[in-house]
Length: 227
Image: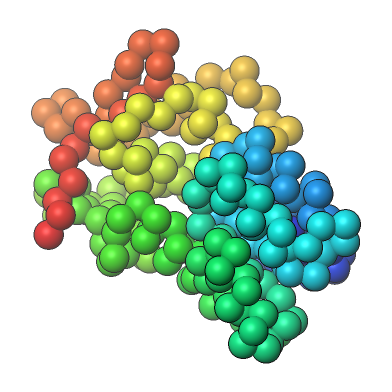
C-alpha cells in the first residue's frame, strides 16, 4: 500500500511511519494540514491516515476538500478526540473509519488493509482469479494450488495490479506505489519485476496473467472470481 500519514506530533508520526514501513508499506508523511492536503491532491495514494487536530488546516477540513475534489481513496481518522460528536463530524466530512489514540499498531495496519480491500470491492482477504489465489492477509500466492514464492516488491507489484484487475496501470503509477517520492523513476526496475512475476506465476507460458500495453503500461488480465 502507498499510505499518506498526516500527523503533527513528530515522535508519533515517525513511530507510525517506521512501523508501517517495517511492514513493507510505502509511507509519505506530512506534519501539517496544508502539506498533507497538497500531497493528497497531487499524488496517488491507496489510503490516508489523518489526525484531526492539525496546525493551519484542521484534518476534517482536509478531508472535506479532498472529497470536493473527487479524491476517493479511503481515509482513516486518527485522533485523541474520543467524543462521538467528533467521530460523526469526521465521518460526515468523508472519512471511512476512525481510530482513537492510544491504539495498537496491529489494529491500525489491519484497518488500513481492510479499507483498501473494500475500496477495491473485496469483502474477504482471499482474492481469486481462476487458478491464481492471493491471500492478502497472509501475503501468499498460489497458482493451481502451487505456492509461489515472491519477494516483498514482487508481491506489492502483483497486489496493485490485481487490485486494479482489467485496468491499465502505468509504469509511473506502479513506481509511485512501490517506492517513496525520491526514488529514481528512470530505473528499469518495474520491467525487471514484471519479468520475474511472469516467470514465477506462469513458468509454462500458458496463463499470461500480466499484459504489456506498449506506451501505456500493464494490465492484470486474469478474470476475477466474484465467488
